[in-house]
Image 1: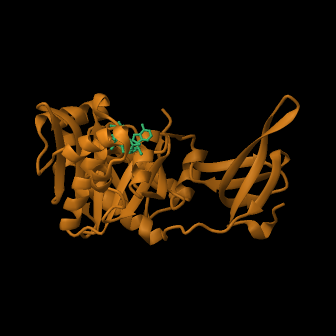
Image 2: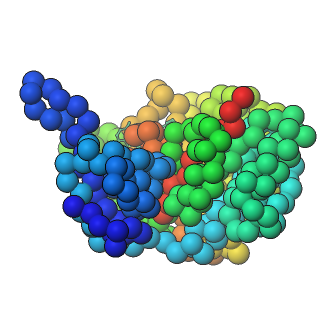
Image 3: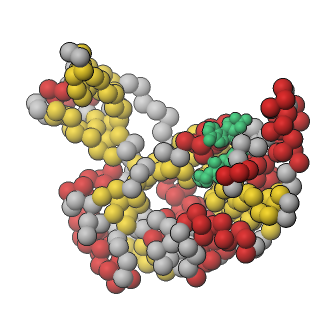
Length: 333
Ligand SMILES: CC(C)(COP(=O)(O)OP(=O)(O)OC[C@H]1O[C@@H](n2cnc3c(N)ncnc32)[C@H](O)[C@@H]1OP(=O)(O)O)[C@@H](O)C(=O)NCCC(=O)NCCS
């Protein structure tokens, strides 16, 4: 069982969440132990805080720390990601960023609470709420975890909601398996067929998106207000990937190089449903990765919803691992 000296360390908790046919049902949770009382323990998990009654705990033990990125590494990557997805309307609260883009995407319409907001936390959250009210927009705050866990706790206490967790994933460049090699090697007819499509895919990288590219982005993100064009294009180093089949655009992607030239950012990787599982996403990412390397980037990053299993499988295959996670927190109405 746990003791006070375990507070601050990573632990795994097996808890009893129900009984079926006379047998207990277990669920495991992994995170940092932030509080231990006689009745409850509180964990900071990748999905947020979890309070577990001690009576539900079947077993709990300390586990070795992960090779977690330093706070400075998370801050640097979050700033590179902000540069790669620039909101046109911006404000500052000390180090915190305030961002709005006509409501287009959570990332461009949320505060980024990293660094010192120059005032106590409750006053900082009040100021965020006021700024978004002035913009006529609902207040959102993106909390990278575990870095912004204290902000998350303040928002919990105010009844803020949360969107599903997003993984911020990274991989060194060049990527481990960008697809071309495997396509050429194709074994068996099915793999050879899929490989051929990828091998034959011509990925066009251009500095401005076509109308068809923008239409796909609009479909994915729910419309395309003027602010969206700014978010997509107001980056010095940006490329829009297009793959055509029979004259129609079937796959898209966007690459940026930000963070003092270190980070290739991948976004809006999308393949039309009828063209999936033919290697087109890999081909798009391979082309953007080549461009990123030629522009001097040494690492790639992307943001993907944890529940997007197809995309998570694709990125895992290409060597991406989770650097940190974030939750988009939503003010109560
Ligand atoms: C995710 C997405 C881009 C993948 O495009 P795709 O062209 O089908 O992917 P690829 O054919 O290049 O897949 C390469 C590998 O990724 C993995 N993969 C891709 N889709 C998968 C799925 N649905 N389930 C499991 N693994 C998958 C596989 O390992 C696959 O290799 P294999 O086909 O040899 O098994 C596509 O499903 C899509 O457009 N989804 C909607 C938009 C989206 O979610 N974009 C990502 C936002 S972060």
